[in-house]
Length: 55
Image (cartoon, rainbow, N blue to C red; front, side, top):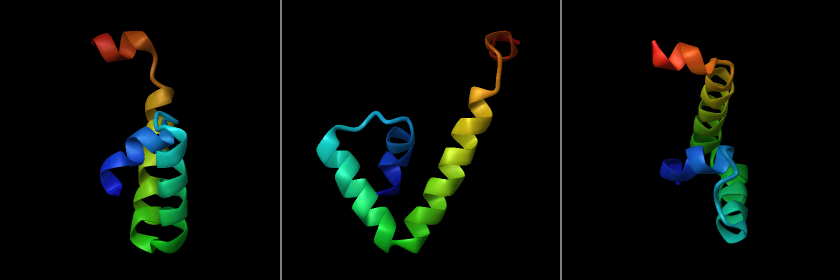
């Protein structure tokens, strides 16, 4: 399940996949913790400016 967390955070899964991941996260503490880490990383990356990425 952890291999799709990035896509889940980015809302890049189809509806069925999203439901599956969402249900799993409610019952799996390990994946839920991984989700929090991935979501935080995505939030931090969103703060970067394009010119920061080109350096």
